[in-house]
Length: 124
Image (cartoon, rainbow, N blue to C red):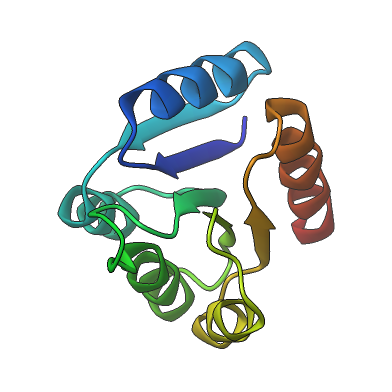
């Protein structure tokens, strides 16, 4: 059973995504904070990360930090970075830091799930 880590500062998004992916048979952990996400990445084996680009307001870029940690410490793990602020510069930086996919919000849960399933199949 694939295990996902979902990181977002909005409780309603965490709740909806967690519930959705659990109903699809995934093991799911969720967190709103960078520090907890970092601790989880270092101590639990995940197959895929879904992280929001910003966790602390308009100038935050915590999602890039988490993606970078995943690339460095868990190279098998795939990562999806979600953002409402997509630019070509952000996309370039996300790929440079190790994001497998950058998705611009809004996306439906089924659209995100399709990307998750594709990435997991590619890494199998």
